[in-house]
Image 1 (tube, rainbow, N blue to C red):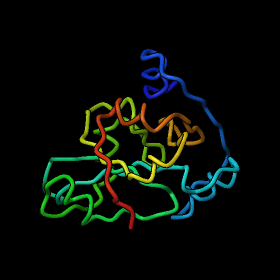
Image 2: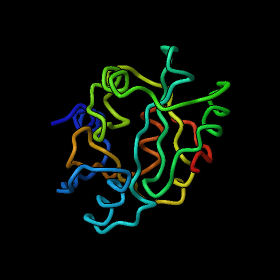
Image 3: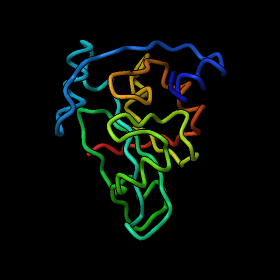
Length: 157
């Protein structure tokens, strides 16, 4: 059981777990997971760890549908940063406690500021990593927003 699942059980928040088997490779990974689960790509979200620059210790997470890229300028503006870039993988893994490709927005080692793409508000449920490759959590977007204190914004590119 991952820290993300433990948190949801402890908080008594309704959720479902979905297992999948998709080979980890390249930028189409999230799309392949959506297809395997028979879900639209707009319902499956990826958690990306970002930083103002490679020398800066500050990190945040941006959560966007797998069908889209992250608009780094838009997320930087929301966070009131001059710019944003993807975090180094080792820093992301150390801060979250999860392996890249399986980073969940829930149950991270450090509580990071969160920006969630506003497209989630059109969904009844959304899916995202449960903190382990091969495992997705499905839950109501409002519950995720409250749990991680996420800001909603248009951050897909």
